[in-house]
Image 1: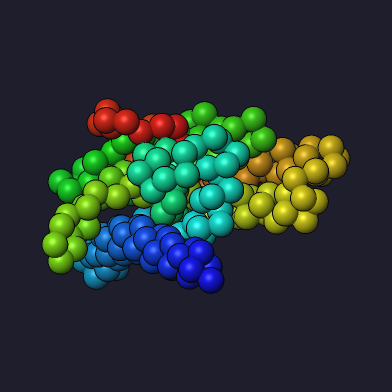
Image 2: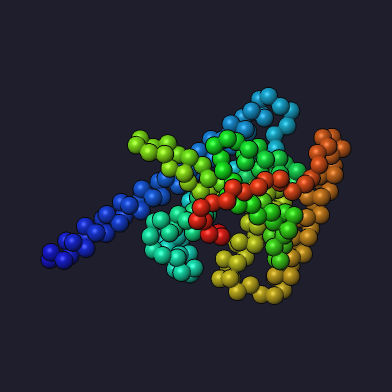
Length: 230
């Protein structure tokens, strides 16, 4: 009986520690969302045009964190999760045009309390399957009652066309449990080309009204002390 009580108490503490761990990431999401909402409201009220179409956020579940740690051989400790799993908190910003994605990335990354740890430009260098998006790992401070914690958040910034393609790909891979038939993979690759051409055409049309150069985001990540690749 005492062993059972001890195990129950230990599980209770583990659950409480995990909840606190996840709460800090939720606070980090809230901080980033506040920054994006401020930018959106500013553009809606003070400018003729807003580069941000819509935004959503997600927090990995404890089960997903444990599964990823197991697959990658990461130590089952909170410190190891924090240092090696950089996408526990995620925010996705969807823009109308490619130039907007770089513009939004620049506006967020140059804020004084945001530190950019990593940049992966899958717009300039798409994945082999056609996936395109701009990924940034940023570190943002959260101010708690007795401490200040610096938390990692993954930012994904992409166009509407890129987001539609990525959503469809995710649904297909989920439906086929990752074993997607070659014919569908070929059609997905073709759809990626179509989405890319649509983005390019819409950008050209938009530039007739509001010219803006399309170029990769010029951000130099700060070298983190001990962060692994996400």
